[in-house]
Length: 384
Ligand code: MG
View (cartoon, rainbow, N blue to C red):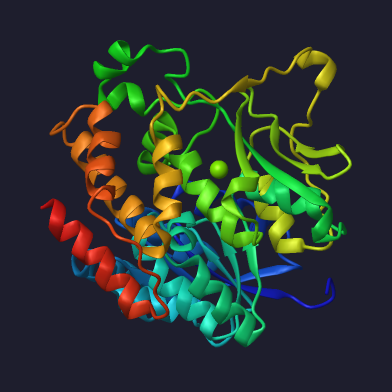
């Protein structure tokens, strides 16, 4: 593998995962080349990336940004086609030259391009957990049919992937996802009721985009990760647990039937799981700060509290309600997080509105992308 250059299509290029991915890619120009880039609203950064990586295709979310991007490319003498919206994201995800697609968009909009990439037989390094939450069953079927691989980028899932490496599946007793607990780990319910969007945006360990940072504060992120793990590793939800670990050094663990527990440790830096997925099964020589356990001295672990973090209870209800439950859970959360960011609802009302929606859902499983997207739309409409 090392003698040929791996060609990469990257969606979500201007987000936190996108930047970390480009950091890894640019350290190994003899191994990796960017062939297509998709970005959101940060047009200036996308222009800079286009100049630096000179991909063969660019995509932006909105028409407004496309004009500015096209003009800027013309000004610097670059002729790179620019596409807009979902069709642009799908074109990046299915770029004929791409060997691997990094899916790092935020939210449900990531589903269509992820699905398209797998359908085209491309390996997908998946950071967009929402697509697995909404359509894990379908994405696994599509991947199995085309021979494409779904490679986890989420740090917890990368840890589990590493801890499962080479082990027969029947030996697995349970998966244990670690959670930092977010900025309100020690807050009472009353204190959480007063939390502002600015407070929820300050994560103690990880630097991430706004949506996932708020999801970490509600622990909705961990709830979504349970569903993600359920599909990524084909393990029943009853065998997936959450353990609070504030230092974010142990990224997750696998317990085996003999009582042995394997974990993956490392500094909280998304470049590690990204590098692992890109180079798998090799490991890249990374010149990054190394974990110093003696300097850390101790690692702490606590039971997760579903009373103060109802997301951990609601996810079990969502899982019991099948595909419709997971889709409703995700859609309701996305809408509620946006409302919280706009100051329309309080912090605790995020979980409350998710619960309200979940209580209206009856179990339904879906076998097509259209059914899944329609149900997602239906839930969002219900909340409007
Ligand atoms: Mg994670």
